[in-house]
Amino acid sequence: MDIVEDNVAIEKLDTHSAVPTWSGFDYQGQVSIYWVMKQLNQMDLSSIQLKDYELQIESLEDFSINHKGYPLTIHQVKAYQDKATFGKFKRAIHDLLGKCAKYPAITLCYLHTCHQIEMPEEDAFKTELEGIKSEKNKLQLVEYNNLLFKEGKYDETIEKLLLNQAEGNEFRSVIGRLEIEDEIKRQIRMFLEKNNELCKYEFVESDENINFIYFNFIHEINQLVAKGHADKEKDNSISFSTFVDILTNEYVFAFTEKTAASMLKNILSAYFAEFCEKFDLEPEDCLAWKENWEWICRLNDHDFLLLCKKLTPTVNANTKKLEAIILRELIVKAGAHKTLFPLVMSSGHFALKIEGVKEMFVLNKEGIHHLITTIAETWGKNEAANQGKKIFEALKNDNQLTYLLFDVNKVITNELEGPFEGKIVDAGHDFENVIPGFEEKDTITKYKRMHFMKVETAMEVFKS
Image 1 (cartoon, rainbow, N blue to C red):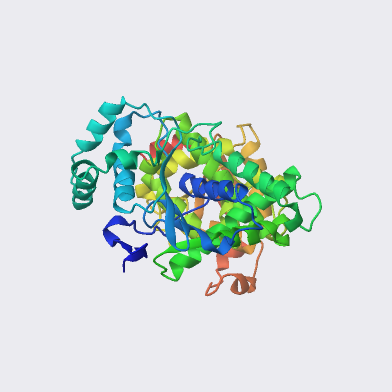
Image 2: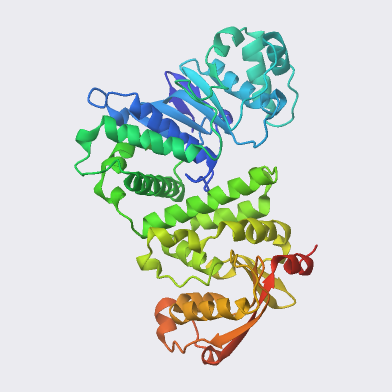
């Protein structure tokens, strides 16, 4: 069904397909949230109808800001890591301009990037756009070309394009992947300072509260988007009034299981962004990791926290009573960079078919299950035994973790090598309470022998 905008129907041909894995932890999601916060901080909330404004995701563009259901501004987000030349962005620019030409009620179009784009001279810029040839969305390309260059709408439309707006500009559109979180937090702080009459709580602007607000805020936006996809809503949008309600609700200042899950997803996403920058990788090209990340984004809070315990099973933590200080122990940066990401991306064809948390990050070679972890303890003569004791202590206190590691034979780490063993305490019928359909296994009461394997050895074992 077409969307009507000032008597001009927005045709389905011009819209994106909504992506169920949209995430506020990814660059595109973070940019859209940053932009809403930026708009809210420029508004006088006492004199406008907030419910008339909304963030729309993956419709006419990656996102748009709508007023009474119609797009005021449209935004495309490109997260290329390198300082790319114009050629890499010209189709995106062409499509933004084409949509502005076709739907003149759109006031501005933005291209958001991680880096400045090396732009050609004005005449060369126009010539490059006019000369684009592509089989991808060819009908759309031809239509936009006709509007811009044959019907003469280019000159009036180019005035609506904003890109390369770096720090210091009112409408900043160039923000690095590793900067965007701080920029959102800065906008949240500004919002709370400007609208303190809406917040009935003390010390809301402390650094700790800003962190909790940010992670709870991102979590709630993710939940709303996920609900929209689950309900098969074609136009996934969130009212500005919903953003304000979330930001001023008491629960966003609390540290809960939701906060912990949100913080850990953010940590994992940030580690991956840093890993890509370190090795000049484009995140969008890392398909094996992308598949796992999509699974992660679908997990509920409890299952995701359980997955984090599985990634670093030496940490003996209760997911119901996590403290902020322990979170980075659950996903260790050095282990993620050296072991987790490289093995996921190079050995994906050995991975178990994912059906849930149990299969995630487990590689199978001739029936032997190898668990990829972020354990980054350095090698030492007794370290395999020492760290092994920690794993069995964690298993003793968590039946669900025991179930997840029951079939694991080898634990892949940064440096540790060698066997370790311990007794998995008999959980009896307790398993039936935490794992539906779980059949008690006799071996649950026996000593289990496992081996640490360092990542270099694993790379040899799982070579293509």
